[in-house]
Amino acid sequence: MLNKRIYDYDFVKGILITLMVIFHLTLTSQSFLIVKEWVYVFHMSGFLVLSGYFFNDDSSKFLKTFTAILWPYLLFNTLYMVALSIMQNYLPTNNRVEPGLLSILSYVAFKPSGTYWYLHTMALCMLGTFAASRLHCSLFNKIVIASTLLFVVSLFVEGFSFIHVIYFMIGYVIRKSGNDMRRIIYPSLLSLIPIALITMYSSDLARTSLSGIALTLAMLSLLLALYNYLRLPLLRNTCVWVGRNSIAIVLFSPIFTIATKLFAPIFAFDTTQILWSVVSTIFVIASTLLCARICDKIKLSALIMHRNMYVPYTHV
Image (cartoon, rainbow, N blue to C red; front, side, top):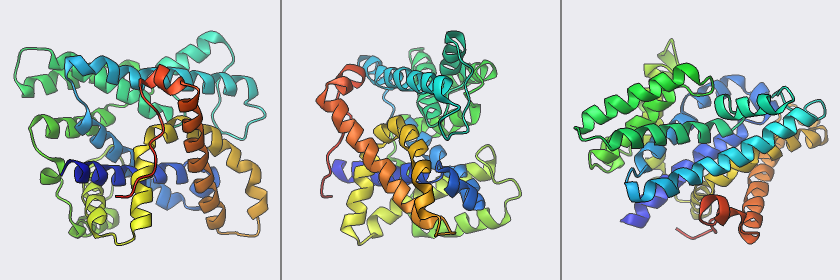
């Protein structure tokens, strides 16, 4: 049962992180803007729900878990900011950073760029939730205190949105209530019905709206069900593998996402941008996994994450 549970959620993470890669590709997001806006409602929101669910606030494990998020964030986002500040006139990216040490430190602390906002948000959510969990009060009061604390932080930290706290707390509350998430967010292909209705009739479909929260939970239900019904072992195993390596993809994908623009002219014949998008997505994910393996070999992973970064492919 444990392995099935882990594979269920890794499968979902694999699909969500792949969507993140696809729609961080500039040409793809420009060519499929409506689809991008729809995907952006639920893909990282779903990740945050899962992150809250798997967050362990046990004091004996917190420091190791927290630093495994914090150190990679500080290292990779700082390097990314330095690269942007020095080479932003030469790199094909829309992100811009003013040169200078104080500017870079400000961006790292308050306004993370690219995919690194997720690690920044996770670190703050984990810290605030852990602090509240040490209090001697009911679970409800702990949730209220943690949420209030994180709301105050969101007022002063530009790159930290309170709506992301809500998604994290949804998963955390499910865990602390002692429930398997699949009992609350029940896996069902019938989730296609609310997904379709929300998509077609919501007048305010965004990550920050109630309809956005509903769409996120419905998509989690659908993807959990899809794991059980998918009869393509290679595809299912690949999604699980990608999901188990999601942190590596978050860390390295900004580098290779930028690089994909360099070979876009090769696919100029495809006006739909679909072929370029497929090749670029495979290139980004494969390159990030290669980098993760290199980090394991040179012991950088153990230094900043206390474990190997790369998870090998397994047959589910």
